Length: 265
Image (tube, rainbow, N blue to C red; front, side, top):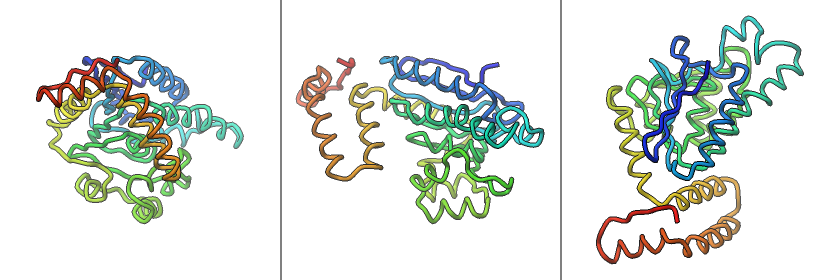
């Protein structure tokens, strides 16, 4: 059974993690390949301008499958080299695919986002949360470490001190604390979450698709490069944008005091 349910609503693609009966655990054999297939299709689809990622049922994702860990099955079975390969060839594939999405991603966190689930949410560009959402990176409580690269992901979202506090204590924080810490940008009532996500996605989707994708790339590059490199990337990318029909449309719409209609040309 597929992990990801896909719904297209015009320029918005909604991805739903759909193992609701077990709080949407991640990392089962084949999950990485499925994420790669879905991400590749979205990246090729120039009609897709925004992705919303959410979970089915009462959780966003409870993280890795603890029962599989107990039973030493699937990704968590076999010898030490086999488990290492399970992470590289499955869990890491999943995370790389999500990180590699070229369009803006909104995580609509509808419930607990724990461990791997929290790190998946943090790979989104924007996170909004239901009041019932909770966040934690509880790896150490299971006697393991963040094997999904969470020690790289989380400090970039909330800073080193707060990330270290969450990793070292295994504490789980509520949605209000997550907003205070900058982990999410807004908190809404559970019944309003998807409407809020759709409204935000709709505003983003009005903007020119090539500029959206390039801006996301520049944001990502800016986290890892020098200022001089960021400026050079911006200059080269901006030169391309100045030659597009969408740029001409944006300028004309501003001068004519009307709404712009961007076509991706």
